[in-house]
Image (spheres, rainbow, N blue to C red):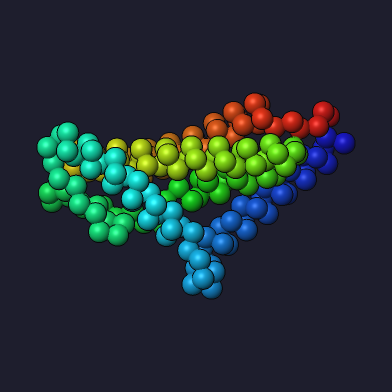
Length: 171
Protein backbone atom coordinates (compact mmCIF):
# COMPACT_ATOMS: atom_id res chain seq x y z
CA UNK A 1 0.00 0.00 0.00
CA UNK A 2 2.76 2.49 0.88
CA UNK A 3 4.30 1.84 -2.55
CA UNK A 4 1.21 3.29 -4.27
CA UNK A 5 1.09 6.24 -1.87
CA UNK A 6 4.70 7.00 -2.79
CA UNK A 7 3.97 6.69 -6.51
CA UNK A 8 0.95 8.99 -6.12
CA UNK A 9 2.93 11.60 -4.16
CA UNK A 10 5.77 11.60 -6.69
CA UNK A 11 3.31 11.76 -9.60
CA UNK A 12 1.38 14.68 -8.08
CA UNK A 13 4.64 16.46 -7.24
CA UNK A 14 5.94 16.14 -10.81
CA UNK A 15 2.59 17.21 -12.25
CA UNK A 16 2.45 20.29 -10.00
CA UNK A 17 6.05 21.24 -10.80
CA UNK A 18 5.21 21.14 -14.51
CA UNK A 19 1.97 23.08 -13.95
CA UNK A 20 3.73 25.79 -11.90
CA UNK A 21 6.51 26.17 -14.46
CA UNK A 22 3.91 26.28 -17.23
CA UNK A 23 2.12 29.12 -15.41
CA UNK A 24 5.41 30.92 -14.77
CA UNK A 25 6.78 30.66 -18.32
CA UNK A 26 4.08 30.18 -20.97
CA UNK A 27 3.67 33.40 -22.94
CA UNK A 28 -0.16 33.42 -23.29
CA UNK A 29 -0.44 33.16 -19.50
CA UNK A 30 2.27 35.78 -18.99
CA UNK A 31 0.24 38.15 -21.18
CA UNK A 32 -2.60 37.93 -18.62
CA UNK A 33 -0.76 37.51 -15.32
CA UNK A 34 3.00 37.41 -14.83
CA UNK A 35 3.49 36.02 -11.34
CA UNK A 36 7.30 36.12 -11.61
CA UNK A 37 7.31 39.78 -12.64
CA UNK A 38 4.85 40.65 -9.88
CA UNK A 39 6.98 38.89 -7.27
CA UNK A 40 10.08 40.60 -8.71
CA UNK A 41 8.42 44.00 -8.21
CA UNK A 42 7.42 43.02 -4.67
CA UNK A 43 10.96 41.79 -3.91
CA UNK A 44 12.45 44.99 -5.32
CA UNK A 45 10.09 47.16 -3.27
CA UNK A 46 10.72 45.27 -0.01
CA UNK A 47 14.49 45.05 -0.63
CA UNK A 48 14.61 48.75 -1.42
CA UNK A 49 12.96 49.50 1.93
CA UNK A 50 15.59 47.47 3.77
CA UNK A 51 18.48 48.82 1.69
CA UNK A 52 17.30 52.41 2.10
CA UNK A 53 17.70 52.03 5.89
CA UNK A 54 21.06 50.26 5.52
CA UNK A 55 22.20 52.95 3.07
CA UNK A 56 21.12 55.72 5.40
CA UNK A 57 23.05 54.12 8.28
CA UNK A 58 26.03 53.26 6.07
CA UNK A 59 26.22 56.57 4.28
CA UNK A 60 25.42 55.51 0.73
CA UNK A 61 22.34 56.40 -1.31
CA UNK A 62 20.08 53.72 -2.75
CA UNK A 63 17.84 54.47 -5.71
CA UNK A 64 15.05 52.41 -7.23
CA UNK A 65 13.31 52.63 -10.57
CA UNK A 66 10.89 49.76 -11.15
CA UNK A 67 12.86 46.61 -10.39
CA UNK A 68 16.25 48.29 -10.86
CA UNK A 69 18.14 49.37 -7.76
CA UNK A 70 21.38 51.31 -7.82
CA UNK A 71 23.95 53.04 -5.71
CA UNK A 72 26.98 54.84 -7.05
CA UNK A 73 28.11 52.96 -10.12
CA UNK A 74 26.47 49.66 -9.17
CA UNK A 75 23.09 48.69 -10.55
CA UNK A 76 21.05 45.50 -10.25
CA UNK A 77 17.75 44.44 -11.80
CA UNK A 78 15.54 42.08 -9.85
CA UNK A 79 14.34 39.90 -12.72
CA UNK A 80 11.41 37.46 -12.51
CA UNK A 81 13.97 34.66 -12.19
CA UNK A 82 15.21 36.36 -8.99
CA UNK A 83 11.74 36.72 -7.49
CA UNK A 84 11.65 33.54 -5.44
CA UNK A 85 8.88 32.15 -7.67
CA UNK A 86 10.78 28.96 -8.56
CA UNK A 87 11.72 27.90 -5.00
CA UNK A 88 8.20 28.82 -3.88
CA UNK A 89 6.76 26.65 -6.66
CA UNK A 90 8.95 23.70 -5.71
CA UNK A 91 7.95 24.08 -2.07
CA UNK A 92 4.23 24.42 -2.84
CA UNK A 93 4.33 21.39 -5.16
CA UNK A 94 5.83 19.35 -2.31
CA UNK A 95 3.24 20.64 0.19
CA UNK A 96 0.27 19.91 -2.09
CA UNK A 97 1.59 16.51 -3.17
CA UNK A 98 2.03 15.35 0.42
CA UNK A 99 -0.85 13.21 1.75
CA UNK A 100 -2.18 15.42 4.55
CA UNK A 101 -5.18 17.54 5.46
CA UNK A 102 -6.17 20.69 3.62
CA UNK A 103 -5.72 22.63 6.85
CA UNK A 104 -2.07 21.52 7.04
CA UNK A 105 -1.60 22.45 3.38
CA UNK A 106 -2.99 25.95 3.96
CA UNK A 107 -0.68 26.39 6.95
CA UNK A 108 2.23 25.19 4.79
CA UNK A 109 1.24 27.59 2.02
CA UNK A 110 1.17 30.60 4.34
CA UNK A 111 4.41 29.70 6.09
CA UNK A 112 6.21 28.83 2.86
CA UNK A 113 5.28 31.89 0.85
CA UNK A 114 6.09 34.20 3.76
CA UNK A 115 9.41 32.65 4.73
CA UNK A 116 10.70 32.06 1.20
CA UNK A 117 9.86 35.62 0.14
CA UNK A 118 11.49 37.02 3.31
CA UNK A 119 14.62 34.95 2.65
CA UNK A 120 14.57 36.17 -0.94
CA UNK A 121 14.52 39.79 0.25
CA UNK A 122 17.53 39.08 2.47
CA UNK A 123 19.21 37.41 -0.52
CA UNK A 124 18.60 40.44 -2.74
CA UNK A 125 19.88 42.84 -0.07
CA UNK A 126 23.02 40.81 0.62
CA UNK A 127 23.71 40.43 -3.11
CA UNK A 128 23.23 44.18 -3.58
CA UNK A 129 25.77 44.90 -0.84
CA UNK A 130 28.20 42.33 -2.24
CA UNK A 131 27.85 43.92 -5.67
CA UNK A 132 28.35 47.38 -4.22
CA UNK A 133 31.42 46.58 -2.08
CA UNK A 134 32.86 43.33 -3.52
CA UNK A 135 31.79 43.53 -7.15
CA UNK A 136 34.25 40.81 -8.25
CA UNK A 137 32.35 38.28 -6.08
CA UNK A 138 28.86 39.26 -7.22
CA UNK A 139 28.39 36.90 -10.20
CA UNK A 140 29.63 33.74 -8.47
CA UNK A 141 27.75 34.53 -5.26
CA UNK A 142 24.55 35.22 -7.20
CA UNK A 143 24.69 32.20 -9.47
CA UNK A 144 26.26 29.53 -7.26
CA UNK A 145 25.52 30.44 -3.66
CA UNK A 146 22.44 32.64 -3.33
CA UNK A 147 20.13 30.67 -5.63
CA UNK A 148 21.10 27.36 -4.03
CA UNK A 149 20.61 28.86 -0.58
CA UNK A 150 16.99 29.82 -1.28
CA UNK A 151 16.26 26.34 -2.67
CA UNK A 152 17.88 24.77 0.43
CA UNK A 153 15.73 27.00 2.65
CA UNK A 154 12.64 25.84 0.74
CA UNK A 155 13.58 22.17 1.24
CA UNK A 156 14.39 22.69 4.94
CA UNK A 157 11.14 24.59 5.39
CA UNK A 158 9.21 21.74 3.79
CA UNK A 159 10.87 19.26 6.16
CA UNK A 160 9.93 21.48 9.10
CA UNK A 161 6.35 21.77 7.86
CA UNK A 162 6.02 18.03 7.18
CA UNK A 163 7.24 17.09 10.67
CA UNK A 164 5.43 19.85 12.56
CA UNK A 165 2.12 20.46 10.76
CA UNK A 166 1.40 17.66 8.30
CA UNK A 167 -0.63 14.74 9.56
CA UNK A 168 0.12 12.09 7.00
CA UNK A 169 -1.77 8.83 7.29
CA UNK A 170 0.14 5.97 8.90
CA UNK A 171 1.44 3.30 6.54
